[in-house]
Image 1 (cartoon, rainbow, N blue to C red):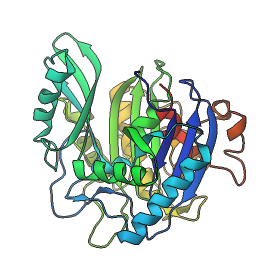
Image 2 (spheres, rainbow, N blue to C red):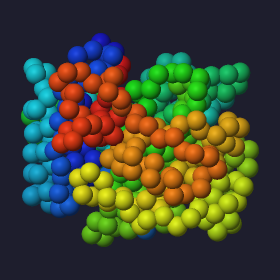
Image 3 (cartoon, helix red, strand yellow):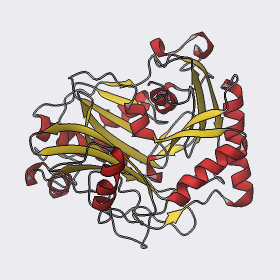
Length: 384
């Protein structure tokens, strides 16, 4: 029917959140959240020495072998139970679900083509072929999807998403064991961005949580940047991504590439934007609502790189930073207030506001309710 299921569930390292909307306006009519313990590791792509970071404006979190660890059989059972509990609290009749997965479970890249076949059945092999040199896993065996972002004379700009079959199968099986059927699968930040209106004002979005931070820039419905930094889950046998800087997949002026901007920041001796001012030391971590912690210094660095790219590319500074994820707008504002980003006073607001909540979800954002940041992914997934 051209629409995703009206039931959505997001799996994050901190917990599972579910929501229901009755139509494409995505006014949430019911929400629920179930926390996950430290002994449950959600399926993702492992970091470490097993592969090299692929180039592209995309996820630098996934630079190794596929990992679907969920803390053994006991951890998997807890994950299934959490998904079942969250969904059963919000579902009515349908059992079909839009599943939102962590950004670390996929690779997102922006690609440029001279031309691309109009028919998806002909275009998909072309996209898959391009991804062979950009992915740290087998592109032929991966689940691949794409969307044309913009077209101009002699140029087709495409966003491509790739996910190893093993990781996709892990998420699908967890949902099915919980008694539901996955009808669509979306990565967290792209799901959140789907809830934005396609206005001409460029937006900087920060999706931060315990295990990773993704920064994205959107203008007029076109994705200009998608960059994920792994904050390190410290799982057995895994390590934090050593180099979170990803080169743009498309040809861009050298001075506006992510790597070039990052090099300028490093040369400045801090997390500074183009002008070279250093970032004051910030707290090592910020405790979020459920007691877990996010490495805020690395979040500030990720945002500073994105803000510099924003200014270099669009020749202006972000008017506002939109917060998604478990860190939340208030905590993110505290992180950014302690760091010089070259943006002046940083205005941060939640992607989900109270106008997006129906009577059945009115407690969200209130004491004891589901924090608004948790709802960005599921709300965007339901907005179609």
